[in-house]
Amino acid sequence: MPEGIIVKALSGYYYVKPLRDGFIATEEEAVQCRGRGILKKKGTSPLVGDRIMYILTENGEGMVDEVLPRESELIRPPVANVKLAVLLFSVREPDMNLNLLDKFLVHIEHSGLEPLIVLTKQDLADDEGEATAQVKEMYEKIGYEVMVTSSLNGSGSEELRARLAGSISVFSGQSGVGKSTLLNRLVPSLELETGEISMRLGRGRHTTRHVELIDIGGGGFVADTPGFSQLDFLQLGVEELSVCFREFASYAENCKFRGCSHLHEPGCKVKEAWEAGEIADSRYEHYKLFFNEMKDKKRRY
Image (tube, rainbow, N blue to C red; front, top):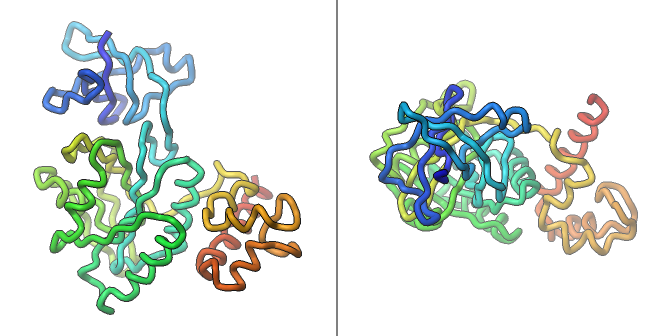
């Protein structure tokens, strides 16, 4: 029984590339497969990125017989075996949204993936890049990897392609930041549809309609995912939130009270670090905002 990887899921079909000696046979045509009924009975739903065992049928199509164990799984977007989460946020049009970036980072930290922050549209910066440099410095100080790109002039594209080699990455971020444009720059033959920015609404049209693994060369694949501009915390417990702010860790272990919320307790080392300027104002303010949002949702649900 051949082994393969699901590179696209669309309208109930799974498009599977065969694996040869552990590597995706990119030169071969994808096999169009249906999922066997037994998977549904087991409560298993195949995802793009899944390594699977499949059966070839007489008409040249196939059946997904078994989903092999996953290294990772994202619910939104629905992708398996991703190693790197590339979070794309634009410098301008739309303006950089640090609240949303921090929300994405919380979800990525909770999922256990490695995040890479990519700031796009640097060519539109009107301050000679000062604001971009400040954001880059702040997140690098926390411990995040940050890259700056411009799809217009191509700066940063080669460095990003090299960084994505050899693994499956997922592209996510604020709508309208230029995900499709950047992918077109990485792989010129793609010719992905790109959407115009609605200046009135401040967000882009959702141009990506399904999840698909895109071969960018060097053994790297990118999951081009539907753009979305909001996330919820239903999968995350409020007690887990502070762990998702990685700069809190070294201070939190010395808090006076176990299970400290880092909001109002006496002897809170996280709050002391923020007051001393060791934790960025925006990060601590977003932590408080997310904490209260989660408490409100917990009461409602």
